Length: 625
Image (cartoon, rainbow, N blue to C red; front, side, top):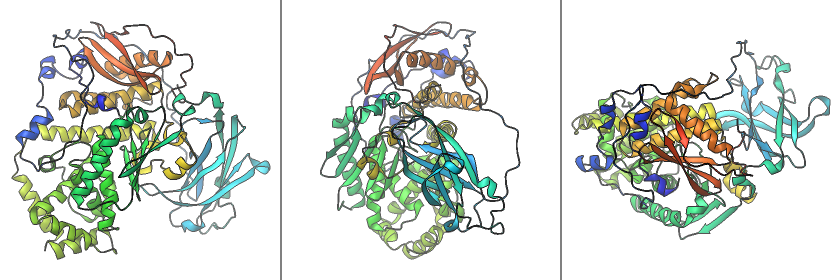
């Protein structure tokens, strides 16, 4: 996300014009205490601030907003309804389902793509995964042609069992509808008694529609991977992207964040880190594995997160393997949050986890939580883990804590390994540690604004993940599509980490998510909560023909986005730039941002202030509705 956008303000004017269901106007005008002020009021351990740029947007006027009209007209929007199918009994043996097959890159495929395939096998439990194979063919029936075969295996953070064919079919010199066939247990190794009673449900034939190569989205059609070498890192990014545009600013931020993590852990890199700047959201915006990290950097960064802090977090993961290569998940994530001075943003850990405890949302140190850390509520679990690391360091010093990490056994469950090391280094059981820590937290100063910020942070990221599960499943963090980035770059494959769902519907929802997170960062808790609620209202209505009509703000934004997209521009984010005016920043030619002023009338109508010239060959929106 551009650094300038991170500082953009958004006053209450726009919200006042579209808040028929969010309470009195006077309550919206009350400015909450900024987060920066809270950090001065609450005694916390010092955290390191990320470098920032001075904002370049025009300062907002302070005029009194136009009063909210009593009736806001509700336009209509078109939407393809999600079909409601009559329930049918699912097979009770091993089988394949046509709805459980995904193609990559997606959601569209084009002539010349190097395609990967995921196939989710149903009812595999109880059968040795090494016996479960899936074969892939082009064509159907007796004329089908063999491509590849693979076993099912765990995939992603969530460990979903599936057959994964990486870059298995090169769709060269073919276009239009292509038939593919997948066959489960092609060599008939699994008997009926072993769990495969009906071989008829082992074969699925599906169609891939390959669009002409010249229709490839513009931000990948003429792009390629480029590389920059620094003292700490090898940085890869693709041309015609926000990362390419801002690379001179990003490089010193990366170097600073990496150096900060090295200092915090008193551990130095032995070799350069490979940092890949991705042109689409995956998960929460950052992943690390081995000596490589992949970070989202785009303008419409709907998953939030400060760039500097994400780099510091992922660098911690790379470095702490040198402390203990088999560290438990809760401790490695907690250490990364502590090192970065917060999870997605700068945040004092103690008062925030104290607010979680006061709200009765504290997660007890039970076996299920510690052994299945990623299954817990994401933001609370990460905050709790980071605050615990800080507590242990402040309780007995960093030397004791890092000795605790180093002496963790390599064998056993995470729960057992931490328990044994706690007894050795701290002479504490889980129960004793939790009782001591929560009693100390209960005595900390309480501030309702921290509690509100935590509630909104949880609500925001729960909504992001909900959006991903409905509209962008390949981005969902537990099963995000993350093939080998090194091989992707070696193949000069730009589409894999650029192409993504981008319809008028998804762009509108992502703009709203971007603004919800920005309001949260500005400390505008009421505005953030209302925007999060608006997104959820639309998501609640996705099975209807007109989901955006459930909310006046959503439908107005949707219609303006439709006009902008029809003119060949892709909206990225919006700011309030005047009384009854917002400016939507959109791309006409990658990666240059074009400001598009939108006037908001006294009775709720949204109008483009200037007529857009038609962009003749945009090719921006993949699979546009």
